[in-house]
Length: 372
Image (cartoon, rainbow, N blue to C red; front, side, top):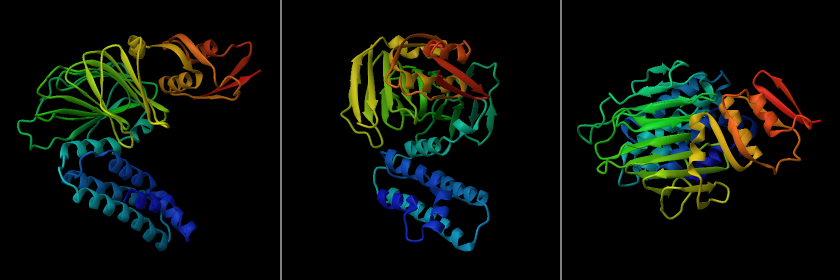
């Protein structure tokens, strides 16, 4: 089923020119549908999610520029095939978990906000978009209702978006605290389910989960799922990174694969880090100086033998700036040390690249590093 959808969206067909143009209009939507197919561990969409799918289709097609009728027909056909396949997939499975699928759909459908938003914002369950002022460091939702009175009551979802160059702390309705790093997004119910607490993370977050043995807390990402009862841990799961990691500071968590990643459930103890390499799908677990992994919450980066390319990627997110290193001679170099994220970006880059050997050129939100 997934292969057929991918064929439809790939643009490979005898009538390439027309079909490719039509497919480009639906590619983003198709990728979201594929993500739902791959990530979902349960198999039925709620009625609200079905309505949202069709609403999204209508919005996309209305925004498309006017083309000849043949292209429009091809575009609608590609979308229709993908949605029919999606519906068929969910309707022919058993053991539905409406709550998880709704969470997943909302998370997938709002990820574009990470690059579109300039300020921290929260899209509330009622559709209202709330902008968070620069001076506000904490969003406190602890006064909201914690749990549904009955499991059958459907909850709506909040999506908190932290664009590049920003960070924020949020206190969830159950009093759990989450620090979100730049370029991150957290999707969570407006009211937690009576039997469990589930959130979806894109990016990096440091969690301090309120203990509740009767209501386990789950953090879902594209590649991993973490189950906790009450603990503190850090998850990094950026779409563009070659790895995803989970570091445990206190308590105990169970780590499972998600999406296309599969491995035996792993129980982590305090002081351990699990790193998943996406290309090889290899999971490694080791003892770490775990406090270093949450140094970003104190506006620092404490690094040990970290590849320069990875350091640059982190700085790009923190400072919302594109950094290009034209010389590849140091592509295998690593960095160990402490970086103060309150300092100007150019100052940090001169720490990484010797100004006697490299020159920096800055233009708006772009910095180019060249060998002299």
